[in-house]
Image (cartoon, rainbow, N blue to C red; front, top):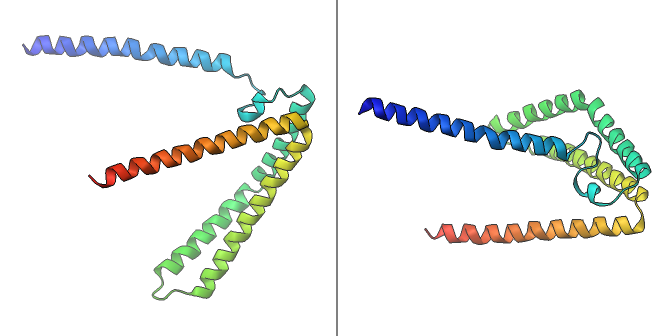
Length: 165
């Protein structure tokens, strides 16, 4: 009896092994065929951009990415220092509200700078697009936001159902 169950387990395992690898290989083939290096992704891929527009947008994004990459080590050091300061505030016997306010102001300033840079990038990209492409981009943004609101509303209803249990 034990020998037959070992053969059954071995047979099932080998069947699953061969069937499990097939979808992965197929997915890799589809992925490989689907995206070519350098193609626009996300909403930009749906705007029928000209080659010139694609090149301009890539340059904008590379410039943004280059700025971020150059400052990465500095940002990591700043985050580590802020984490240490937060930890010191947390572990102190009394809360130093002046130091807490300074940290909050520093964090708010960083968030403000990120917001400004994001809007500047969006503006630069919008200047490359035609009026029709900007309208289509705005429509896709609205649809994405509505989808997010619907998901959030569905999620809240789901949570309420499970609270009573």
